[in-house]
Image (tube, rainbow, N blue to C red):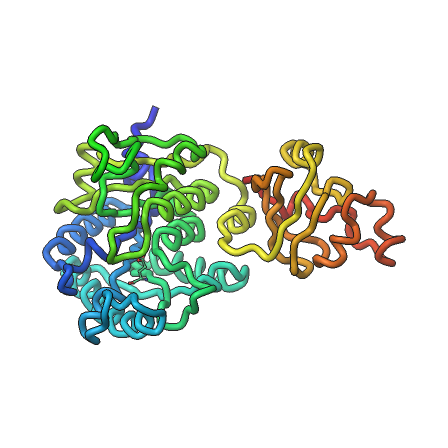
Length: 377
Ligand code: GLU
């Protein structure tokens, strides 16, 4: 069996995403922790020399810019403050990375993404192609959310999920989240002395989610353990292994390699095809189809969703929009592209497929969600 830490080694993982959180990168006074970053950049350069393609997802723009603009609450008092701070901080961030990688003869590149860039299929394919081309050309993309133009409803907000989504988009073998904590604990280690580090999480069970619930964000960034577990779900549905490790040491990747301290979320062995992975990693859905137990069984056996098994439709959504498919108890069992808009779907609810034409006057598709357009979660 492969040791969990080896899943991220250059020989096994040709493409790696490393996410760096604000509290690691920026001091409470708003300065870049340059020496620490030099150590990490040296580790990334060594991995690149060993043949691993590297993509960095870096936070820190808001924290850095807030200091320059004298914004209260680290630039997070309002969305406008965060946007203005990010616009200033991102320049400094890019400059520091460019300099530190240049010292190793490596070209850094900047990619600023919005949620929409990865949710919209065409834009997603474009991002994927550009990032892929950059790493093939030997550059290291430094990725952040384009905080300056995102709005409250349509933003990632935390770079944990952004990193997982990027990992899935570029078909990375692994995603490592550098955090201010060693990994996922059975309780909050700050309050509970019996809390233990969980080295491997083979499956994201409800018990694991409860464990993550109690541990909050560090204050400077926005991602706590909950967003890290959401990231793990995205990564694993995309076929990427994920690890949470502490970045509070010098050369954190080496410590992980040598001592194996961290929490690893191995991805299942058979990852779904690329289009389905994109679907599974989407963060926003337009609506919901509630289905009965018989339909749940059918979906788990690889069948399409027929109108007969649908009990309720929640929209609005258009034909081709992404909808969650949930069991009667509210559990999300699948996600897919609806063949009909919400109004049509509501009229077809509980009816047989051969009735579609009589009800709607036309019947382009027998299934409400075809199995090729669906991923089981
Ligand atoms: N994009 C934000 C920044 O650069 C960070 C988001 C997060 O805290 O994860 O400051």
